[in-house]
Amino acid sequence: MKLHILGASGSGVTTLGQLLGKKLGVIYFDSDDYFWIKTEPPFTHKRTPNERNQLIGHDISKLENWILGGSIINWGDNIFPNFDLIIFLYLPHEIRMERLKKRELERYGDSLYADPNKARQFNDFIAWAADYDYATGLANRTLAAHNIWLAQTKNPVLKIIGNKTLNEKLNLILSELKHRNIIKF
Image 1: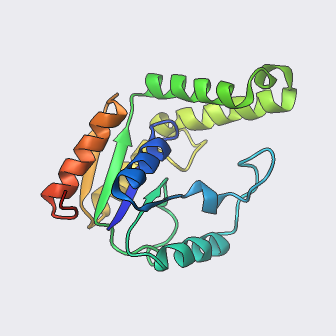
Image 2: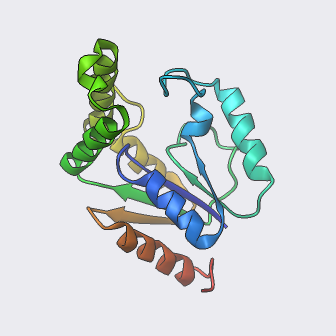
């Protein structure tokens, strides 16, 4: 079973992917772990596409079952096998942006306001994340790009739209996996 979950930053991809992985007993891979070099502060240095693709290719090639979360639409055509199911999450802009602001404040606390560098990084990140819906040129990961990729894929797609609970999303996915005979329980 090879599943891919994608959506905008703050749509719940990682949380859902980790929970689904636990429920199904399969490993969850986060594309950020391959896209970014581990640094402090995080998410400041990208890997080269070749290094990133070799790392993820090596890790998934060893396993029959896995879940991959994150946007990989521009990573190349020959890296990933066919997915048994692609799950696309879309959360309304206002809800998603509030979630992101809350998450970043929980991660970094008052330093987001007290430290000028962190404040700039926070504001840049929020502007980048907001661009998902508007595609003004700040971000490559946009709703328009995801919709084009989803329309072109030959893999089955489940779209989960709206502010659903984690359990509602999990149940929709499990139901789809059962319907497609990907899982039996």
